[in-house]
Amino acid sequence: MPQGYSLEPVVQESTPSIIARKLRYAIAHGEVAPGSQLGEAELARELGVSRGPLREAMQRLTQEGLLVSIRNRGLFVIEMTDAEIRDMYVLRTAIESAACKLLVRADHVAAGNDLLAKVAKMENASNAGDRAAMSDADLAFHEDLVALSGSRSLARIHSTLMTETRMCLTVLQASYRGTEEWIAEHRGIAEAILDGNGPLAELRLGEHEDDALARLTNSPSEPASVSIA
Image (cartoon, rainbow, N blue to C red; front, side, top):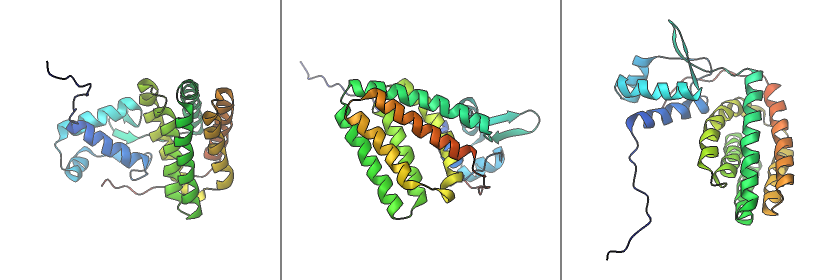
């Protein structure tokens, strides 16, 4: 009897998925500015694709809330108001708090050490004065916190919220301040998870998100260049 293997089948990414990922990245990193209109013909030419899969990709991003369709005008990248940013952070905190609950019930030591490694990357970026790397490490910490929980449902919802968060942090990169306190907040969350102290991890996470929200809603925005590579 042949030996059985518990391997998942290889799933080939579809063209609309690839296009959606590229557009999502461009929006998140400010390569397409908030409020920009997406021209179908121009995008199809720049990406080297036909309009069919491009439309499907854009429809996916519309369903995710990253694009908005305005009748008789076309598709536009969302512009987040302070109220929408607050709503996004409330939902993010709820998802990440749920992830904390799952983490401390599982291998919280491994998860805590993994998150502390992300904090070390934040410190390295801060010491190098690399604001973009600091932002990347910041988001990687929160993405890992949810991914390590093992919940696909939480990770799926969280991914769209992190794209919106990236849009906000792209604006803030030039004005990152209080990095020592910022790093200390992340370290505190990781250490609470390492110790298996769920309530403390959730408390520190909530305080950190409140701080981030205050910074985001009190900082002036700057226009970003429009380009998709």
